[in-house]
Amino acid sequence: MIRTILVFAVVISVVSCTSVKKFNAQLTREHTVTELHADVDYALKKLKKLHPDLYWYISKEVLEQKFDSLKNSIESPMSSQAFYKKITPVITSIRQGHTSVGMPGKRQTKKEVKEKGVRKSPFKSLRIEKIADELVIKKNHGKDSTKYVGETLLKVDGKPVEELLKEFKNLQTGDGYNQTFIPRYTSTYLGYFYEKTHLQKDSVLLTLKKGDLVYESYLHAIYSKSKSSEKKKDSIRPARKKISREEKRIAKAKRKSIQKYRKHHGYNPYTKEYNRNFTLITSDTLPVVGYMKIRGFSKGRYKEFYEDSFQKMDSAKASHLVLDLRGNLGGRLSEIDHLYAYLTDKEYVFIKKATMTSRTSNLYPLYHSPSWFMKALGVLFSPGVALFQIVTVKKDNGIPYFKFKYNKSRTPKERNYKGAVYVLIDGESFSASSILSTHLKATGRATFIGEETGGAYNGTIAGVFANVEFPTSKLKVRIGLMNISTPYETKPDGYGIKPDITIPEKHKNKDSILQTALQQIAKTKEN
Image 1 (tube, rainbow, N blue to C red):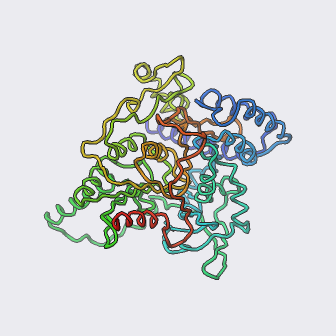
Image 2 (image 1 turned 90 degrees about the vertical axis):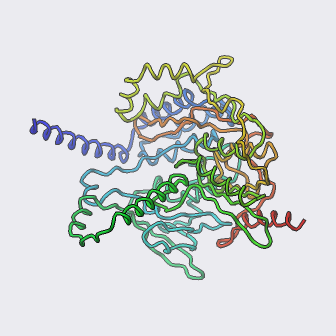
Image 3 (image 1 turned 180 degrees about the vertical axis):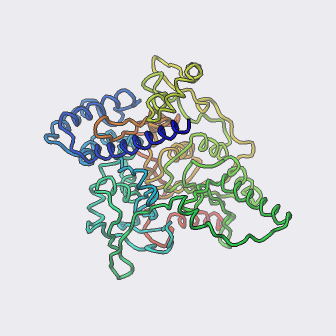
C-alpha cells in the first residue's frame, strides 16, 4: 500500500513538473499564423456569447472590422507575448474597464520553489503614483521601507517612463470615454504592465531622481524562503520565559482584539495597511469632521466598521463627513449598499435588473474552471445549482437577468447620517466606488472634489466574471457577465462622475484635494 502511494506521488510530481515545462514552452514558442487566427476567432466568439452589452461604446460593425484587421495583420508566427500586444488593444477598444486581457507569467517548477521560494515581481514592493506629470514612489513595502520613497521614477532598464506609459495605454481601458483612468491606472501598475510586455527577469534597472541627484539602482525580484529552511534555521531556540495564567489571558485577549480590529478594517498583511480607515478631525478652524478613507470595498467584515464609525460621528456631533474614494477600484455590491444606507434618509432602489446574455451565463466560471475540483463540485451539486438558477434568474421581455435583493426598494439605516458629505474622487475611483458615487451625485447628497471617476456614471459590466483562456497562446480575457447599473442615468453617456470642484493632485507632499475639502468645511464655520 505504502509502495503504491509512493509511486503515485512520484507520478504526480513528474506530471506536474512536465506540465509546468510544457506550459512555459507554450508561452515562449512562436505560434503559427493559423493557430493565432483561431485564438482571435475564439476571443470574439466568447465575447459575443458572454458579454451582456458588448456594443455599448462600439458598434458591431466597427468591432468586427477591428478583429478582421487584426487577423490580416498577423502574417508570421509570434510568441504569446507578442500576440498579447496585438490583440489587447482590439479588446480594450470596447471601452469596458472590467474586460481585460491577462498575459500569463512563467511558472516555477517545484524544484525552483524549493530552492528559492515563490517568486514575486521586482515591482511588488513599490507603490507608484502619478502626481502632476511625474511618477513618484509613495511607499516601499519591502524590508527597507524608506528606500526610494519620495523619489521620481525616470526610466526602467534605460527606457523613459513616458515611453512605457504610451506603450501601455492601449493595454487597459476605463469605462466609456473618460480620460482620467488610464493615466493613473497604468502609472500605479507600471510594474505589472512592464512584466507582461518584457522578458521576465530577476532584476530591473531603475533611473531615479532624488532632489537634484539622478542615479541608477537595481530592483530585484522577491523570493520567499521555503518553510523547511526556516524551520532548520529556527531549530535552536532560546528557552521560553515562563508566564503566568493571568499574563496568558491578557495576551490572548489582546490578540483577539487585534484580530477583530483587523477583520473589521480589512487588514492587508503585506502592505500593513487597512482597507477601511476612520478618524475624527478636530481643530480651532473646523467643526468636527469625520474622515473615512476606503481603499477598496473588499476584504473583511465591513458592517461593524461602518456601525462603529457612524456611532463615533454621532457621539462627537460631527456635522461633516469626508469620504475618500481615491484609488478605490471597487469591490462588493453588498458593502456599498450598506454604506449608502447610512448616507440617505429615503427609501431607494440600489441597482436595476442585472441583465445577462443567457440564463446560464453566471454559471460559466463554475463549469469552465481550470480546477477539476470546481468542475466536480458543479456536477455533484447540479440539482442545487438548478434550483438556485430557478430562484435567482428571471426573464423580462425575453432578456435574462439575475435577481439581486438590491433590485427592490431598500430602507435607510434607522440612525442614518444627515450631515454634509464631501466625496474625494480620482481616475482610479472605479466600479463599485462609481456606483456609490452615482447615487450620491444623482440625489445631490454630496459635494464631489478631485477629478472625474474612471468608472462610468451610467453603469458597468461586472457582477460575476469569466476568465476565458485562449487555446494556443494561453492568454486570458476577463469578461463581466452582468450589466450593473443604478436607476440614474446622465447624458452624454460614457463618462464618469464629474467633480463639483476640480482639483488635480499636484504636490508630492501635500494632499491638495483633502485640503480643499477641509477649506470648504471651514467656510461653513465662518458663516
